[in-house]
Amino acid sequence: MLTIKSSDVKVNQIQGGLLPIVEIYTHKEIFTNGISKGLKGKNVYFASQLMSSNGIRLLRYKDLKHRIKINTQGRIPSWFKFIETKLIEDPLKSKKVKTDFQLGYNIHSVNTKIDNLKTKNWITTFHDQIGKPIIGRVLDNPNEDKIRIEHWIQDLENDQISPSVQLPILKKCEGCEVKTNQIRNKKSNTKVRCIADINIENCVKVSANSIQNDHYIADMAIYEALTQAEH
Image (tube, rainbow, N blue to C red; front, top):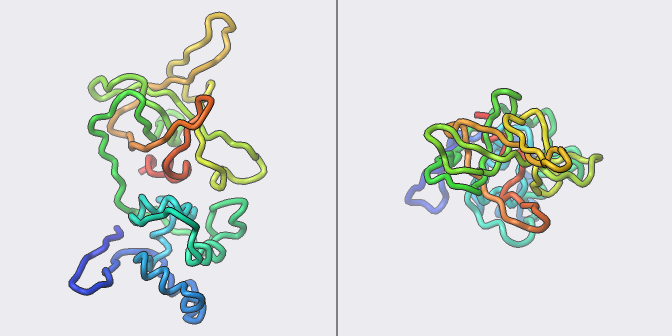
């Protein structure tokens, strides 16, 4: 577990992180071009602070507002690009970290409280029947320990690059193995919605905003939202 302890001195004490930055770079690399100052200013001392919950991918810079609670508005800083080029083989094609730097499950604090879960809220959950996590939108108010959701998937524009570097845009699933209860169009008999009933206790709440044509954009990387539901 990664914890940040406040003390009387200005620098916070970071405990329990994995893969210290100082073990990845030389002293000269860290203290060149203000990299050290940038890292220290954001209390970043471990690569695990910047990686997905499963320790396989680097988070997007804007996702750090959730992970380490920093202001991510504006341009991506040089210190983050510096780490990205070291940990990832080709940042333009995938967020997957090189094998030598991959970690085990990267435990950190995740807000899994689902109090006041309502219709139209977004959640991720691990779907036992298909053995993987999914994203859904709540259709009905909770009924005891169960809730009905509509399955949504990432809208991918380019199948030549990893979904991890594509925008976290969501669209409705029109039918898949999740289909516990599938609704069909009576006139055309085509699959139009993918519906599932799931256990509330397995849900992790996420956020998404409407953009256009019944598409939404998630507030964090899809791969991280899904990974949080796995444990």
